[in-house]
Length: 480
Ligand code: ADP
Ligand code: MG
Ligand code: ZN
Image (cartoon, rainbow, N blue to C red; front, side):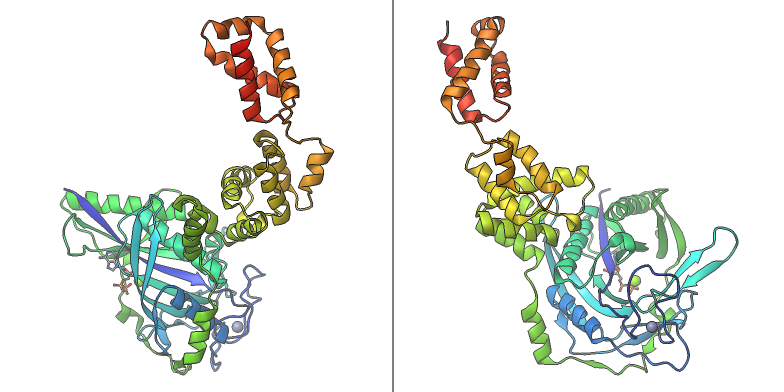
């Protein structure tokens, strides 16, 4: 039987406000345990939470960018559960009236397919703390620094059908939040993490199967593996005549397997009730409108513009816009050299290669757009040839204080366009290699590359390649 995989994602994103959602404590990652806490976020009785306006602002920006309808009257609720990392024994969240509903995300997957995922809702909530499990004995240390760090949770409809579609959706969210500047979206630090709800059904069926949920995955790689594995597990189970039970499973990335944790809890288990300490949130129309107007150009909008105005391919435009820093470097350089294609070629080729080789992240890039633009012009105008250009680009990549023109001048790297000099070098190569000339003449045209290579070498790699080609061809065919 053919099966179809159905995936719905719940994504938690930590907002990059300076202070926490209901108190003035710092949200900074790290810090000695329990140093970013106060009576409010460590759950002392008698304290009162106050909503941080910046949290609401960031949350609304996300809601607008994801095409949601904003509930201008929304409320907080208490989700009751006990766990040692949650000192209040409840989490303040939004259940009945979240701030954003009915959104829509449109994106293109890696294999170029257009995809739409509907957003059921986005709500605000507070993060819980962390438990550090002792490696010496049977005990744990609670660290409340993360208690009260603001989160939004984005709940999708079950609209994704494969790991590729899920990862594409998450990448879209990640770059959108990065462009909005509302989260640092560092998945490895847990500032963006996903719960994967997954079921399978016979292809063609329109009924949803029973789903499982894998919580808190925080890398694209593990998300991909977890989806493939869980979908396979359910299919095998059903084909063997078994049934899938609704449960929470834990993905173990080292073992490459998931394990049953507990049967799924329902909303009733949490005894939700309206949060009595926080009044309902009323959102001013004018404020909402001005937020909508102030949104920056987002990754997917830039991508469309690059394709439309610069004639880049969808794939290249996607790579250049995935990270804000790359798009900024690209745009600043193009503004100076007016050559988007050549700029893109170097960024997608040599720059990505060097970033990969030296493990340099986009945030760590240190390329000066002025130098980069001078470089692009030098390549375009044939001042240096492409072989020389590669080594010059490596210098630009390595240092911000690098002067392209001076370097070319000082090191005498200018392309040699002087036909006389090239002819002289080529003639030398021909005279020095009579046997190879014989081979060429007897039809072994493969040795042609040898003459090109040797001529270039005599000219220290700096000759105009088209001219070398032309002159060598002419000399070989006319000599006797
Ligand atoms: P709960 O509120 O109990 O977590 P919901 O029905 O609200 O459950 O759904 C939570 C997430 O699970 C949503 O992202 C939704 O798209 C997804 N989901 C629901 N049913 C299925 C299913 N049968 N298969 C895959 N995903 C599902
Ligand atoms: Mg859930
Ligand atoms: Zn606090």
